Length: 197
Image 1 (cartoon, rainbow, N blue to C red):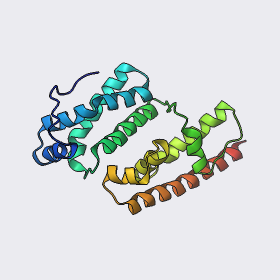
Image 2 (cartoon, rainbow, N blue to C red; image 1 turned 30 degrees about the vertical axis):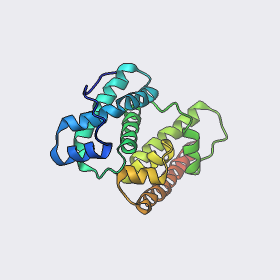
Image 3 (cartoon, rainbow, N blue to C red; image 1 turned 45 degrees about the horizontal axis):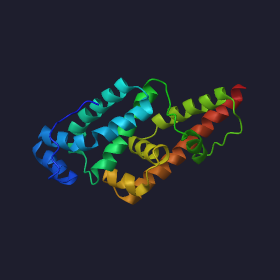
């Protein structure tokens, strides 16, 4: 695993290093903070991408994203927030290459938007997943991010709230509205598929 900064400063808490970076913009502070979780990020990327070089590249990309995003967001729990950021990055990489997570999350995700499958035909299942990805991509950004975090990543409302720096009520609203919009979109696509048969 590529190391970012060799200094492992344990004198400061995550919050202190983050606030120091946010106020002064010193990359070394962010590097020290990221180094604490670099192995976690790399392991997460490897779990999703299944290739060591891709996982290492992704970990570097995530650090580069942090340079801007860590200053733009009000972060209350860096580890949780970084986990969401890393996982979303991996999911985006998979989507760009027309791959999907190998975790057993897809059936549960399908069920929550009201599409229970009673078939094991791979073609039909793949078709539904493409519809799902298409519908998900059309959601407003905040709804999409919260839906992914809650259903695909298994984070709680509170964890998402802390990672995003937004209230529980706002997060709950994003998820409920996103779920409703997904269900409507998927039902339209399902009806369209039936008409074609």
